Amino acid sequence: MKTVFRFFNPIEAQMAVARLRAANIEAELQHELSGINIDGYAMASGGIGLLVPDDQSEDARKLIEAEQKGEGEIQQDSASESDDFGAA
Image (cartoon, rainbow, N blue to C red; front, side, top):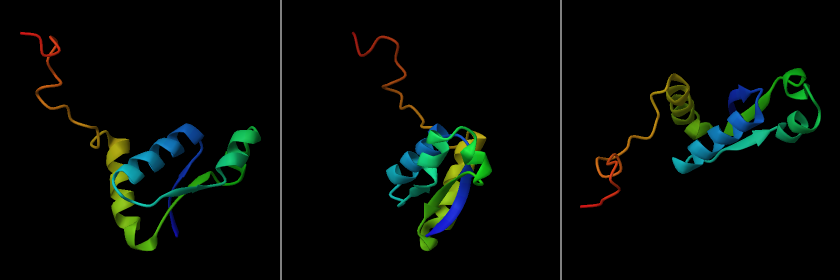
């Protein structure tokens, strides 16, 4: 396993793990509970580490970087953009 990102906010870390898992990339967090239970510990310990398998690290890094830039947002299809909720 390889650390591809570090977070200081446990919610952001969980969101990143969920996004990677949705993309079929195995992911786990390191030091998450310490960061939650002890105020300021996430920063003192170097952050909450996001770990992925070595062979998926490049894909994971690209996906998270795109998310941080706002390029990884889920696009709505034309049916869900309708304000009338399918009413005729």
